[in-house]
Length: 112
Length: 122
Image (cartoon, rainbow over all chains, first blue to last red; front, side, top):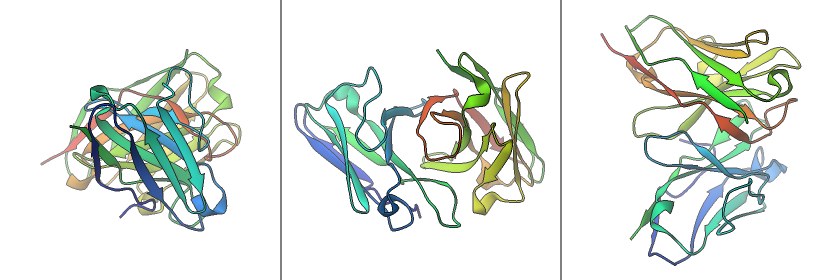
């Protein structure tokens, strides 16, 4: 059971918009710690997609955006493309005894 | 450009230990923290622990404390993760990742190694 909760799967047709939620608690997201998002294509290492809740690294299209409110964060993907099909993970810092770095369980995005 | 290269795949017997290396090129090795993250087959990402060079300290996930040791050698720009008392549940791909900050773990990891598959089997 992950400290951060994500839906196991989401799907959308090409061109559509999808969102992936990431729900935490008072010792991580709710405590004000940043949320970061990673994209993992099959058989590859994760790639940083969004950092500091809403910032995109150089080279990441502006179709990807992040937001955070209270104890939750969201990743939105607009103009869905076939090569967006991947697993997406949120990550934050946690001040409890469970560990310093916590990940969501991951969300499989399927492009229909 | 920062590049992290990990050691090759390992097959280990239950009860044994494994040590995975992660050699960095580019950037300033001692200025950034390192995370170790693992991913069991078909599962999500799990933080194992990390190392903060400026403090010279390692921190570990609660569930792995006592079995995992993370070190770093600045002279060779290499980080290491050693896991002992292996069981089949430790079969996973192990990743090192460089944080974007150097004074703690509240940073994203922009650079990742290619991953090292560790298989634990009798």
